[in-house]
Amino acid sequence: MPYSKNYDVLIIGSGGAGLSLALNMPASVRVAVLSKFALTAGSTYYAQGGISAVFDAEDSIESHIEDTLDAGAGLCNPDIVRLTVTQGKSSIEWLRQQGVAFTEEQTATGEKILHLNREGGHSHRRIVHTADATGKAVSLSLIDRAREHANIELLEHHNVIELITTPTANHAGKKIIGAYVLDSQRQKVKTMTSKVVVLATGGASKVYLYSTNPQSATGDGIALAWRAGCRISNMEFMQFHPTCLYHPKAQSFLISEAVRGEGGKLILPDGSPFMQDFDPRAELAPRDIVARAIDHEIKKRGIDCVYLDISHKPEAFILEHFPTIHRKCLKFGIDITKQPIPVVPSAHYTCGGVLTDSYARTDIANLYAIGEVASTGLHGANRMASNSLLECLVFAERAGIDILQKLPAIAAPPDVPEWDDSQVSDSDEEVVVSHNWDELRHFMWDYVGIVRTDKRLHRAMSRVELLKSEIAEYYSNFRVTSDLLELRNLVIVAELIIRCAQQRKESRGLHYTLDYPDVDNSKPPQNTILIP
Image (tube, rainbow, N blue to C red; front, top):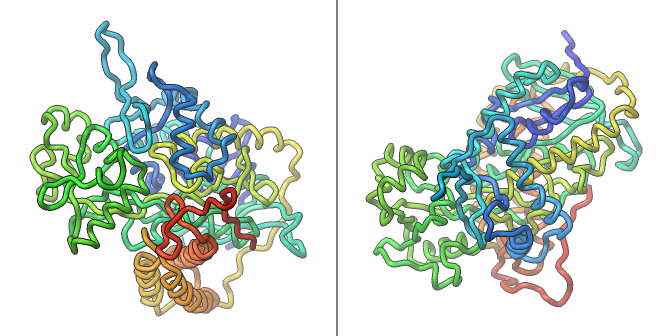
């Protein structure tokens, strides 16, 4: 039986960006928030560190801007950086109004103030946090608040197959009118039309074998936007977090940068520090520098990991500041109050994405992108720690302003045909999907990881082309499943990363290639922009 429903605003993604936008909509606007899995399955829920904002009297907006521009290695948009940073305080206050309880400390006079952490790339303490589980606090508070609003429909286990746009001879003049969505619990494809569609799907780090991200980070919004006709920018800048817990039974557990901010030292198996050999800021250097340094030491010495040691701090301090990390490590027999933590770099954040303007608008009318899926110009060639949740909040608000201004003039979407799967059958070869998934993530890790070469990129592209043809054939013959949709999106993301990396003939920020190891200062820095 056909199923279709109409909304004013269809938000794809239930993380910090998507839920913030939903809560910025008035009661008269019909909103649907789609989550591919559970509402808490996105990256926001797992974010440990916090949100960067200027609260310290010794800090300043100008200092935050300068640090962000420095970390971005010449490719940040200064106007976007200023726009975002100046909204830090108001964004934190808005979250507090939604019920988020941030960690506080007491001054000598008895006044309670926000406790501020310091992380890599920041010259001051400016990370507002809830212990070491900030994302969880933000996610749960926003979900609770959204459930109180009758105009917001929260739909779990809804995976978007394709965006629906008005038919045009080419991409010019297109308008968004909805999406085909797989209800994976009922195995039913729904047709959802909407005046506005917002991509808030997060990043694409699961394209790599090792990632700090949850299973949902498969680049869905980037692939959807690319197929619909949007430009994609700066996909070569995939951030690898320097410190992911290294243990055979630990799946993608990140050791927060705040551990280094509070004095944690990176050491070799013999206990000797090494970061001072790579950067005068040592452990507090930007993530790209720290990740490459660790990668260098692991490969040079033939070791499995390095270690992050915070055990020199008082036990009470560690338990107060890092309770989640302490509990998790104890499960694997590591007491961080007495022992160093084995760590390796792991894919963490997608700095590029769907090209947007200062109001989160994409190339297609009435289609917006917010959060990690978007390339706003904030991060440039390398994201500075804890600027990401701030970006989610600021651009959710910006998108909301533009949507509410335009919504009255947007015509109701026309009738669209239901999804037709009458010519396909259920698959009896699911092993093809799992095999292709594994192959893709392995060669992306080996060839398009922290350190690249032209030869490695060429090899990766050859394999992507083969996988694309296999997946296209499979997609055309069998009914869609969530695993198949993710694989189809991941292979597109892999191609976009490789194409961007091949175009950049220099090493800048997160993109480091042995064939062009230096920054090209012969011309102004350029963004890499791919056109469908």
